[in-house]
Length: 179
Image (cartoon, rainbow, N blue to C red; front, side):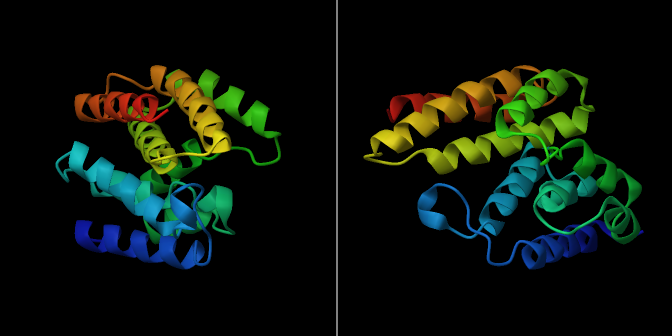
């Protein structure tokens, strides 16, 4: 088993390599790794750094969905728990987007407590990336659509960490105020 610092460091390094060249939606096409760093940091902050595997899973939460990374690779390189958390947060990309969104809303209450934390951190980061000063009509519509849907997902994830719940509520207020 890797030490907590190595676990997180190696997860960050793998995430950076696997997502190299990918751009994030919103915030002027910033590197996708910024999203993963933000999710991991939200989890580390919310748990006072007490759970290295959770933070590592935050770094890796999109790796199976967006890259050639496999569950087996994550289990072997990190741990069974990290791999399980990432799988639990992975959408079936063979489904159309509306169906994936519907599944996230329906599946959220059934997730493990730690997968729920990753989902909340992910939604905080994604809403924040969509908040702009002077948004276009298309950006406003995207922000409203994403925020409305994220609230439905997070409704099924609440109660595991008051810091994340409050941070989510704050970013929703910021998003609504920016419209």
